[in-house]
Image (cartoon, rainbow, N blue to C red; front, side):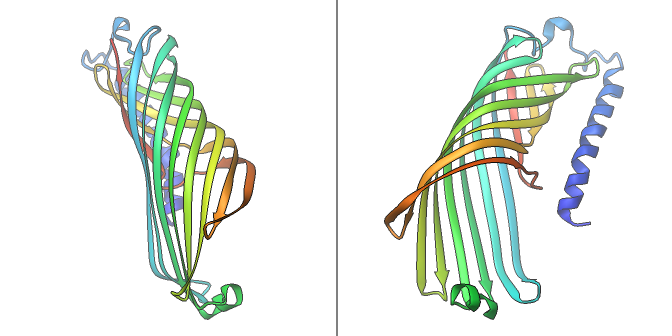
Length: 254
């Protein structure tokens, strides 16, 4: 089983085991675990503040594709930071907003004679750097697991506007260089399911994914310093990457 298959199998088992543990553990009358109704931090008219970090890391060296194409290096680094907050309009339901900054850097380096048929070059490398800024607003639903009100499953649905800039640099045989620069804007509806656990009164840890996005994107492209045109794209994306996870902390005010 490769690491992706393991991750796909691990996530649902992890969520089920956490929920089962929460129900069994919360059913006990432990006064430390159990929060009285008056200390329900997800009740109406309360507020919260949160921040999270998302990341993805991948590296491949000296591999082969179909024994014809030598992959000298594939390296991907992605991360984003976000801060947000919200206000509970009813118990376990909050409306709020989020601001996110992201950056990614990808490098691919190939070496094979078969490349000459495609690129007129035996050695080819490409690197892509992207930065983005996004603002979103939406609603967050919580479902408590057990009676102790320590474990929660949640889903956050946001409408997000984002602006990104992407630079791609292609190098053929180490001499010929082609550059493309994109400026893109997009509007998307994104779903982010996850779990939350209260570490102490008001302070919680969150683990979430961002697997579903329905959006529309438009922008312009510049090739070797000359503007070549514009693009538009509407898409429905469903993705679950093994390292594309979001870890964060939230504080729920008294």
